[in-house]
Length: 72
Image 1: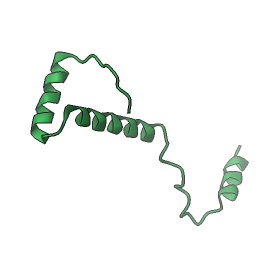
Image 2: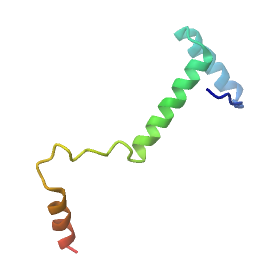
Image 3: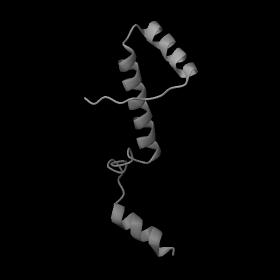
């Protein structure tokens, strides 16, 4: 595990302290969870979770592609 130094505005530090107190968890664990959620959200936005979407389809992918391209 690596350590990093991050500068946060006072408002964020205070909001983080409220979360830490409410959840009774270490601040580092809350920050790690927040970063993990941020990364997962951006992976979805970039399309990382689209692989395998056609797996259950009853359509031949190559035929579908050729049909679409025939319209060009």
